[in-house]
Image (cartoon, rainbow, N blue to C red; front, side, top):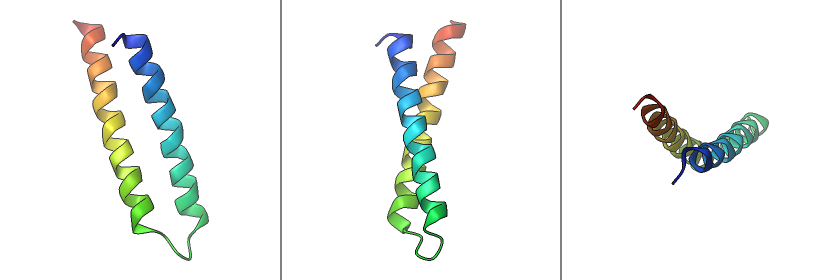
Length: 59
């Protein structure tokens, strides 16, 4: 996968994470453990993706 495509996909996931964070904040009365769990998974995936992109750019 090219760096550009991988970066674009990471940006889409970043946008999803921001939306999930907003949903969690908006549902302060009934915070869903499922939403928190999914947001953490997306965050970890983003971290790994940006690390791969960074490594490829420095090689």
